[in-house]
Each structure stands twice: as structure tokens, then as C-alpha cells.
Image (cartoon, rainbow, N blue to C red; front, side):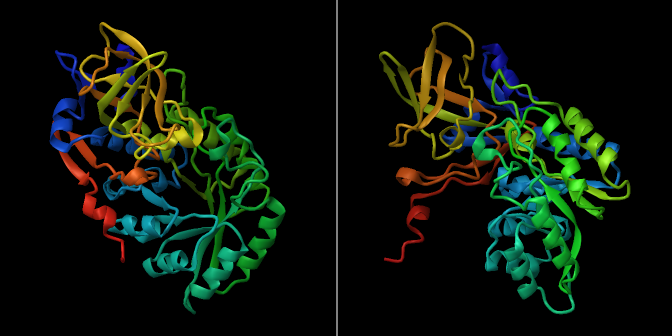
Length: 419
């Protein structure tokens, strides 16, 4: 079980008494200072990953930029780290536009996505000067033409369905025929012609994205040729989707291997003078964070259930698409009394399972339990099921930790009531 440490943020360690240390901070001290559950981000690991993506992409295609897919972790503090490291931001809704602006982004470096953008979101994008809007359909074009002021022009990309089916869960698959995202090439070609004649839109290029948590580089390379067949443009946004390591069985490609395949295909099919954009999300943030819980109940029977003070309210990935996680009792990842247990949450739902079948060392009520690789899609899908208060986010660096998102209060839960 000592290899469990390899799933935690880079730089994590066990001190002399076996206590987990993240960002230079002891996990028991983090739990005491911030309460449980708490989502802890190792800031140095997050920054290192951003720099790795930035430097590896630039080395392969100088006229390029990385934009962080904010939906993976749309916390203002996380977005601010990306901005400080020279990345742009990909946003998928009005709230993400506002947090991106709060994070200090130059709006020209924002890319707006979405298959069903509302009038309000289009208006926010235009008001704040969002650099690129990836249009998903002709209705996006209608709304933009009705919103962009006369005498101005909004830069747009057209999203293409490349007809590539990657090996990942169907709920995070987006590049296959029949996807709700984007347009088949013939439909895209017609929309491109319309945009090229629009006085309020500027056709800049194409966008493609094939899915998420993809552990093979070939589908990324395969997605480039279908885009290239639509013609030569100034900008090609090749999306994101590289998988992260959640558990022992996961063997995600390195950033270098992923970009070797993707940019290799770009050199083969795309014009050399074009600008390339990539949009890493999950692989940027997943392993930079861990969630610390406290054990509230242990039931020993045919199945040993270890219940914690969080669950699907702070991690919906398991219930939504059966993502596997690992876990360990803080202070004794190894050691006597290993039992194969099912870790469940506190919510009144049979599907509230965090880890089904994981060895824990003699779990008891009051123990602290750590689940690594919770940096992607946990914060963003947090919810108030059963009147649950959404959990805080803390940044840890060089032995110091600070709140970047506070825990919700009971008053927060009723603040929106009007009667």
C-alpha cells in the first residue's frame, strides 16, 4: 500500500510517523485547521503541470497556446494560477466567464464553448471582450449576429465532429458520430460559408474535441485529418482530453508523448503558419489535489462499510461514470489490520459509493481518510444533496496552507429562499 503515495500530488511524502504531507503540510494539521471534508490543492504541483504543458507545446509548435479547460476546476484561485503561468482559459458558461475575469485573465485569451449557449452568455462574452467563441451550431451564429455591435467583429471557430470514437466512458465521449457537440463536416462547411459573409463575425478557424480521460494517444492524432479536410485557416483548436492517473491500473501517456502524437499529426496535415490551441483540463488538475475526510461509521458484516463525512456531494465522478479512486487511512497507509472495505458517503443514496473494494488499515471512527486525484470535476460538480454544505478548497505550499474557497454555511443554504 505504500505505493498509494504515488497517486498523491507531486512532492507529497510520509513523515517519520507515517503522516501524509501535502504541499509541505501534514494532513492531520490540514484537517484540524480547515475541518473535513476539505479539498487540498498542492499549489507547486499545479504550477509545475501548467508549465510542463506550456513548455512542451511551445517546443513542438511555437505559434501556439495552452488554454486551461476551466470546467475541470473552475475555482477562481485555480484559474488565477493558470493566468500567472501564462495560459489562457477555456470557459463553458457565464459563471466561468466571470470567474476568469476575476482571476485577472486578458479576455482576449478566453475561449468560450458550449453546445447550447444562452442569450445571456453570448451577451456576457461580448460585453467582456472574450477573444474567441467556438460556435457549435447555427443558433450560436444567430445570437452572436444579434448581439455584436455594428462596426465590431467577433472572432469565432467552428466545432467539428471528426467521427473518432475514443476508448473512454460514453458519458465523456464527444468526437463520435452522433455527438451532441459540434457539426458533421458537411454541415460545418455550410456554416463556415455563412460566417465568412457575416459583417459581425470573423471566421478564424476550427475546433475539435474527442472526449475526456483518454489513455491512448492515437485517437488524438486521428482527429486532425478530418479537420484539415475542411480547408486552411488561421487557428486550429485541437481540444483536450488526455487522461489522468486515478488508480494503479491507469497508465496515462506523458504530456510529451501526447503532444508528440497530436502535434506530429498537425505537422502532417495543418498549415505551418497556423496557430494551434490545446485545452487540457482533467490531466492538468486531477492529481494536483486530494480530499481529506473523517470516518464517521464502520459497519462490519459480509461487506465492511466505512462511511465518511462527505461523498457524492463533493465527488460525483463515481456515480456519474464509475470513475475508480483509491484511498488510505491517514497515518497508516501500510500496516497491520488491512481489510478490504467499501468506502461510502453520508448521503441518503445507495449510489453514494466513493471506493468499492479498497484495502484500509484497521479503519475506525474518527480516523482521517485521504482520496487522491480529486482535482478534476469534483469541485465543479459539488452539490447540496440532503442539505449538504459544499466543501472548502485550500491551497498548500511550502508548509503553509490557506483557504481559497470557504465552506458553505447553513445560512448560505437558505440565502436564496424568497419565502
